[in-house]
Image (cartoon, rainbow, N blue to C red; front, side, top):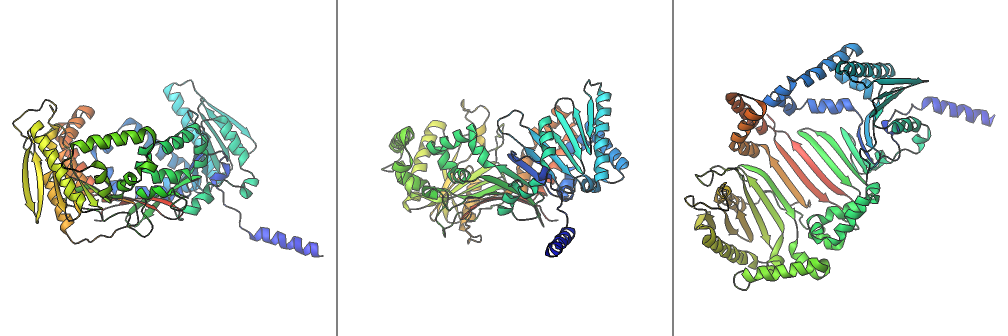
Length: 573
């Protein structure tokens, strides 16, 4: 009687428990090393095509020209044919054919080409079967139209249908799932892998991603980094970085987090003002090599200062890099030939520095916070135009010791004297908001054999000291703008993030407008566009770029995670 009751309860539970939704990862072999997934491809497609920037881009000349091409017209005709035959528009078709998810995976590193597998898991088995047959028919017709000797070979076994197109494309349909690969054995393994034990022992990809990424990703990526580290290339890379001081100095924190991570995950998200890409590693400050304080300051201290954003800014960045710490601890951090080269360089550079200043002393006085700005010109620095027009760029350094700015002032004045003697530079001083900027100009009436293209006419280098910060800029105009920014009351906040940067569409458009002549020439010569049409296209492109808003990047390394975010904030009209 007890057994009967228990059996009845078990049956009721099975009936009451909803069936597990199909997952494209059920077909992906456990050997997969890279997996890209869109759990709801319709939402992803509508998020992208719904952007104002996407719609506006379709009105640009080169894009219109592409839509008018034979290839684009055939693709659009095929889409229209598919919609007619399947009785639904493309958003609904995405739901029917891939509504339970789409996954693209690479199975082995080191092979060329690597085995790949595309899995489409649909919601409507009848539509999936019809779409699969229609796709094969379209391919057959296209091969016949081209007069190709390749054919589509079809086979059927029970509910499964397989097809081979030439030697490089292998496909199969089983139920509401379509599989496509460049290797026949991968398709066979994928069909065999969709079995009950995969539910109990699934791939770790989805669980790994869920540990570090929030829900709701339009698409997400998982990389089996444990497998990467086992490859010869991976082992060689990490072995080399342990011995290569420069790699450790430039990207030591990132390399260390990668070394301690078994996977990398990334997710693309829709936000009210645009899109966000999140990249995550399951390793952070905890367990990090202590000397990487050069990249990641102690907990509770600022990682980066507020961005400088003068008018016309194209890109602004603030980051933490403590060169002084490295030099102070060089006996431990720099070894072998690299140490000897640094010591020799330090002696050689110190010989040409003014007074008693030594390079090592400057490095130790140099602060850990750095800010960089790239900006468009309001007015170009010379009447003579260079063959290649470059934007202006500037750098602002903090000082750990007040003597740093005084010493660097002497260094730059000495360097300017050398430039005056060698290139005929003319030195001048300018007062701006109570700050003295020292600038140097190239003579416009004196040819320079070393610079036949006149690239020097992009530069009017200058420097200034503002409080405990050193300003260096490629033009006097930008130098003054940076002084103005530094003299303002600080409105932004310091951040725990060790790197922050923002690219600005407005400034980029201004720089693009100043670079229009080569773009017009390329349109005329490269695509056969008329001169007036080419100029109109470039004007449309500049106007389009202005609407793109900003793209922000932020790197934050917390206790157990490495977090890199890239955010596109579209300009609101």
